[in-house]
Length: 173
Image (cartoon, rainbow, N blue to C red; front, side, top):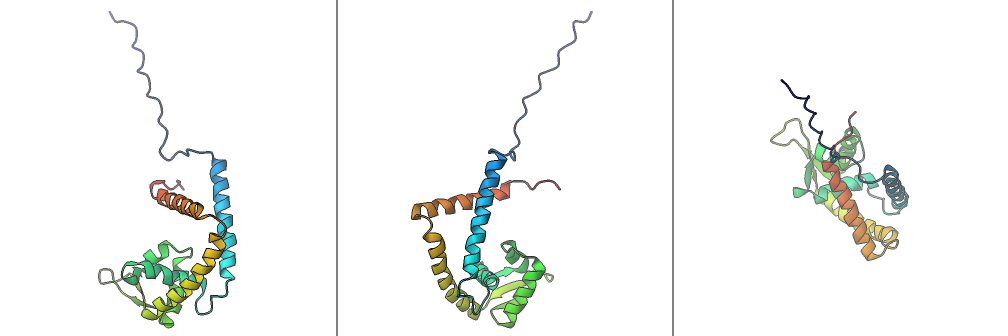
């Protein structure tokens, strides 16, 4: 003889996905909108600065990025990681910088298909001179808008937000 049918085992409670938002979408969107609009406002002011005689702001960005890289050189694809432009546009920009002898190109010994971009001494000089003037303008537009403790907090928050992107999965296409 058999007993009553066994009741199914209780299902475990669903666990929230680690990628699930922990705050409201509206709040996240408002923060993004504020960050983006502030960046646009300040970038427009920086672009209008009178320091961009010898180098454009985009060219400066390439020189600056290379100046911070180990050995002052990066593969073109790595240089492109932090740039807001298509790689083909970056390649043309690097071509122009090379003609002006601000960077050199080489083929890496371990990858014949790659391109290694290196900052020249002239490129480093121009980056330093332009950078000094650029930092003074940034100090004015950003530094006069917030207190030192607020600037430190903003930097820490933005660094955390950027670092968090590595552990947040891309949305499915």
